[in-house]
Image (tube, rainbow, N blue to C red):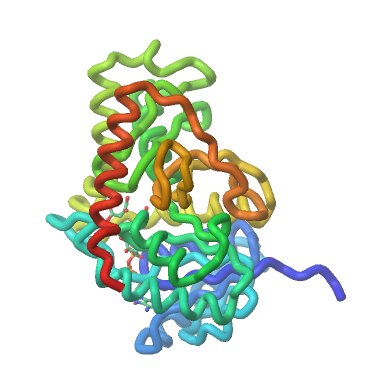
Length: 313
Ligand SMILES: NC(=O)C1=CN([C@@H]2O[C@H](COP(=O)(O)OP(=O)(O)OC[C@H]3O[C@@H](n4cnc5c(N)ncnc54)[C@H](O)[C@@H]3O)[C@@H](O)[C@H]2O)C=CC1
Ligand SMILES: O=C([O-])CC(=O)C(=O)O
């Protein structure tokens, strides 16, 4: 027996799911199973075949299949959930809650059956609440149920900082704490370029503008697209998380995790800095926060609690 390739299933073959599948294959992180509903089986197969036909040009050997049959996802190492509806201009992520809760729950029942040892990454919105729904439906240990928000929110924040200073994005470090909503908490105190704290380089007014733009970064794209939400940066974020897990990189990445006492919250799912590796969330870092940062986090936690409280599934 030779070595086995990793298997990654992506549920939801829409904008984020399809983009994620292609990016995963381009990085040869494993073979990819792209899953959507039976009514969309042919378009899903078509997307997968189209991607495969890019492989000779781009030189990747990952296999990509499209399906609506969860048996094809059997024994996946990582399952990524992008299934659900996306918001349109004028909507908040929270408006999607009960439609997507039903979808995420049914998807998780299949994952539990066919890929019981997988690590599951949730993207569907409102993602803090959907991670809670997935955790309950899966019954997996908390380290294997991970929501995506912090990589994307941090990526937006770092993009704006790099643009402000006209420096390489590679040298920008920072992260965003809290729920994936308009009151998320970009942590200015922990943000730097090439090790230099940003508040020594950028005025407080400009920093505030960057923080505010980050908070509504998803909405900015929704308004520009007109008929859906962001997918390139979200897909890239999912791929970074998947890579950290499959290569056991132990990267320090903000993700949505179940908090059990950390930051003073118990039973809440919210974005926090973690070590992401082969066991999923291997550690949560608990940082000292100033009174203002604590207040901002409390506001964000309240928003997450409110949306979780209306989940009916
Ligand atoms: N957490 C985050 O940072 C982000 C979250 N999102 C969320 O991700 C979700 C997907 O976004 P897009 O891909 O742009 O939407 P999309 O509409 O392009 O794709 C969603 C796909 O899910 C499929 N689907 C629906 N029910 C399903 C089921 N039961 N099983 C399998 N597939 C099912 C649909 O047929 C569709 O193909 C949305 O809820 C969006 O709000 C998107 C970007 C970032
Ligand atoms: O804004 C949305 O609805 C999609 C999303 O979560 C994001 O792009 O941050």
